[in-house]
Length: 390
Image (cartoon, rainbow, N blue to C red; front, top):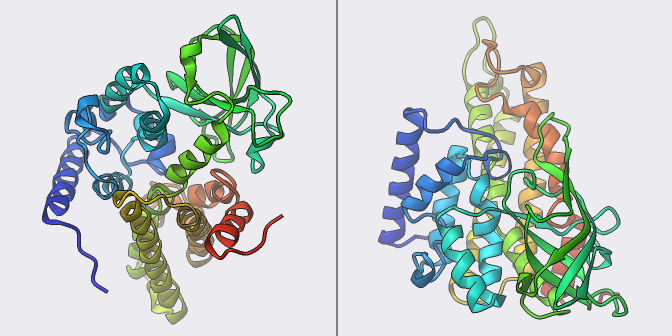
């Protein structure tokens, strides 16, 4: 089948590509790996906002373009392709904004959504805990009703950019007697509130994106509650679909595949190109095809959202495929490139971007964060294939 975007969407893609090329050539940004995690630049996000490229799906009354999820995917795909530093607005635009649109009060919509669209507020995602990662419903952070508001105590872990964000989207237990999938609620919490401590977690590459976040008798007003009290699980499940269906896990690797292919096909003084080996050529071709398959899975989810259908197992499929593709790509890259793959930028024999060792180390977490492959396969089995589950 032939899949084509509309003329307007192709024009939008062209405008984004032209902007990114111009910004890159003028030093407006330097490409970064996993720019949705590691590339934090509020000034750059504000430039994107000025072009209307944040909050694309938001209604115009809240500062958005009232565009489709396909429109948003076209834009974000080009961000990932270019390695643009978009972490400042990423979580707010990808999932917190849609959650506020679906469940927020009129006051929350009026305050948060225009600020998200202008890149004036940023969010980290407060879900995982030391004892509740894949089994999120087992979380133990408490938000006890108190005097018309709430008092929060507990700990979150692996919270991306909590040391930089202005708010944290928090899932906490508000009914201690309910079974674990009930009694949860969502909150929008200012990270400057007294009693919140953020401690860094440094990953295997030496980067600091993750954090532990501790809540010690943190007092929240009733207006911090997002949606219905004790109905947070149903709201969280929908939000995770937005998180899992994004293009970032797949296209964050575009430059790696492109650079590795270019490196493998060029001659290096007395040595023949790596791609002179038929096995290497075949594997590079396989990876290029696998990336295109992943794109189609993600476009399928965006199309469903545009048609007002709710993806579930489709989002789980896209996330599983994308994160496992990253691991296959990283592993193949290190195998094909051999010792060249361990060289840092600057060496005449290094892969231009210096991505192979970085991608290899960072790919380990991809089949864990956002839902493990095992959990996501269970979702596909139960919701997509109607297989029995416990």
